[in-house]
Amino acid sequence: MSTIVSKFGGSSVADAAQIRKVAQIITADPMRRLVVVSAPGKRSSADEKITDTLIACHALAAAGKDFRTRFAVIRERYSGLATELGIGSDLVPVLDEVEESIATGASRDAVVSRGEYLGAHMIARFLGFQFLDAAELIRFSDETTIDKDATDRSCRERIDPAGRYVIPGFYGAHGDGRIQLFTRGGSDISGALVARAVGAARYENWTDVSGLLSADPRIVESPGPIREVSYHELRELAYLGANVFHDEAVAPVAEADIPINIRNTNEPDHPGTMILARDRLSERRPGERTGVAGKEGFSGVVIQRSMINKIMNLTGQIESVLLEAGVRMHHCAQGADSVLVVAESGALDTAGAPLLDSLKGRFGASTVKRTGPYALVGAAGEELAVNPRVLGTVMMELAKKKLAVHFVCSGYSESSFIVAVDEDKYREAVRAIYAATA
Ligand code: ASP
Image (tube, rainbow, N blue to C red; front, side):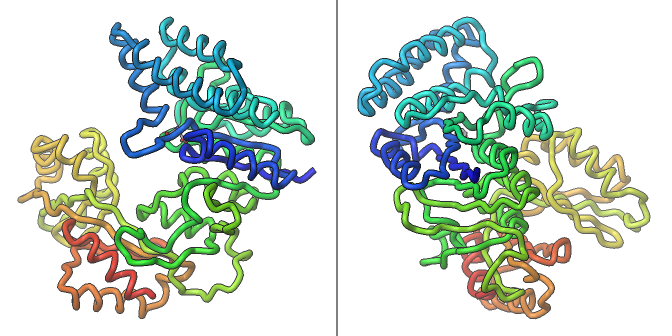
C-alpha cells in the first residue's frame, strides 16, 4: 500500500489555526498516513519555540533552581491548543508525566524531546490517528550515528501498512532506551528515516515557504523559484548556506530514491519544490544554475614558511592542530611557501593567539596570521562548474563591482564553486554571483 510521509515543521503546528490546516492537508489525500511533527514553533517574533523553553527548563532543573514557573508556559501553551482543538484535558496526564520527569532529573535530551512528544500526542488525538513514539522506531548506535538497519527493522515491525500514525520528530533512542536528540531542525531527518523504512512513495516536508528559492529573497529581489532540484544539488546548496531542509535528511531518502517535496502549509495548492535523483529531473539544461547561497562568519589563517609544500601530510597535520583547539577546517589552499586555512571566525576567536603559536611552532613558520573576516558565497547546479565560462563571468562581475576575491574553491565538485569575499560585501557578492550565473 503506497504511503506518503508528511512532516510538518514548527510553524505548521504553532497554533490551532495552523494545526487545522495540517488536518485539511492530511485528509485531502488518503495516502498521507504517516505524519511526523516538530514541536510548536514561534507564533510571532516575540514568542519562544517550545524546544527552547524546554532547554531552559532542563538547565534550571539541573542547576537546582525553580523550573516549574517556566514549565507553566509550556503547560499553558499545550492546554490552550488542546482546548481550541476540542480535545479537552486529554493532554494533562502527559504534561504531568513530562513535568515529573524534569523534576526527577531526566537527561537533557529526554527533556528537550518532549516538545515533539507532546505535540505528536495532541495532533494524533485531533486527527484520530495513532500516536507512535519515535523512541520505538529510530535507533542510534552512538550519540551521532543512526543505526539504519535497526531503524528500518523497528519501523517495519511497528508500522502497520494500513495504519495511520503521528510520530514525534527530532529524537530516537539507543538500544538501552536512552533518548537521543538529533541536531536542531532534526525532525526533517526523522521523517526521512521513516519514509525510507516504509518505502514511501513521497516524503513531503511541509513548512512556511512555497519551496526553495534560487537565492535569499532578503538579498536578491524576487529570486526565481526552484521547481526541481537533484539530491546532490540540494546538499551542495545546504553546504553553501541555504537552510530550508536539514542536509542530513537527504541521504536516507536519496538512497531509496524517494522524492522529497518541500511544500507550504499556508499555500497547500502550490506544488513547491521536488527533490529527485539527477536522472529524474525534467526540463533541465546541464550547466544551468539552480541556486546561489552563502554564509558570513569565516576567517583565514595564513601560515608562511619556505617550501611548506614539501611537508608530508601537511593538511592532516594542520587539521589536527586546529582540532585540538576546537577549530574545524572548512577549506585549505596550498602554495609553495604558504597555506591558507579557512575556518569559522568564532572558533578562531575562542582559540585565540595560542592556536597561532602552536601552528608556528609545529611547522617552524616565519609568520602565522589571521586574515579576513570573509563571507563564503557560491552557486550550485548540475555540471555548472565544468562550464569554463561560468567562473570567468563570475570573476568579471565581481571585479566590475570592485569586490575582492580572496579565495576560490572549484573543482571539488562539478556542480558548485565557492568564493571568499570581504564579509561586509556579502550581500553585494550574492547579488553579483546571482546576476553572473543567470
Ligand atoms: N524542535 C526542534 C528544533 O526546534 C526540532 C525540529 O523542529 O525539527 O530544532
